Image (cartoon, rainbow, N blue to C red; front, side, top):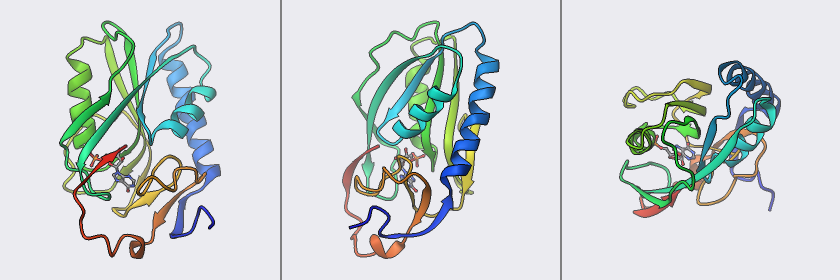
Length: 191
Ligand code: IMP
């Protein structure tokens, strides 16, 4: 089976992603001159994005990882979040860059920012590869968005459907027929 099976169309090409990351990295370099920010990756979806972003940056960075899960079905998040793996680093007084794969309802990010904010970082910047165009999304801090996509289920470049499609080098729309027969199963989704 080919890894792109079930993808109905490419939304954002590999070349577009590469160009956007170069521009994001240049902005971050300017912001964090003479500093070493702590880049926080939310496992697992943000791994390809974080890897490409930190390589494109010139300033030194440190990296840390969090794993969270949301109770909900596989294509919608519920906002009820559980921490599966917390940060290893102390973040008090540090400058944080939170790297997110996708902001959909915004609930996960809101929870995460509350969690990090209580530990007294110097500041937090949120960089998201993708934001969904969703009128009912909550207002949550996102400082830099790579791409705004229509409200469809997208996969690739870290984004998965049931654990698959993460290693597509582009972002594409998942054909709804792939999940049409899923009877809204309430399972636990790890990002
Ligand atoms: P939110 O809490 O609704 O903003 O959802 C955030 C999380 O839901 C993301 O980090 C993804 O793991 C997952 N998610 C939401 N929409 C999509 C999608 O279109 N494709 C893949 N994952 C998604």
